Image 1 (cartoon, rainbow, N blue to C red):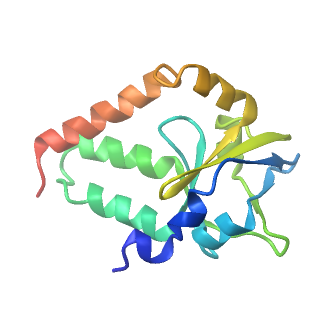
Image 2: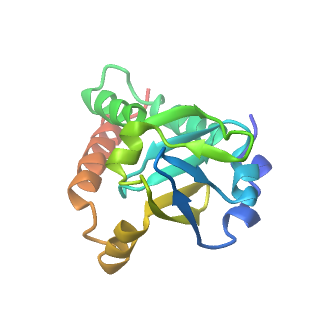
Length: 165
């Protein structure tokens, strides 16, 4: 199995914040260097902060491999896994011009339709924020989307406490 550094082009991901427009059909043109790091087909998911996250498919698989080490009979693991997968969209592929379509449920939840977006690389994921929501997050990083973040952390901690297989 390849490790994240084998395919991610981490230097490109850490190149800095960028801006893009999400059109009225929910399409966004990610910078070419980021698209190259994500691969031809990648995953979008709603992250714990409430923004959209783009990741290479291998990063997504590695996250699942971490979760699957815990008992499938654990309610906490089941809830955590259900949230992980229900907020994820596999097989995202840019069109011939490099634009990708944000799935309707994701663009609604992340407020990414007909708006300016902030693209912020964060290691092995790229955050895609509604520009106004990003400003709110920057103003209150600890409190932003706190209820959802606490719920995810509660399930994760309960899953870990129950132990690995």
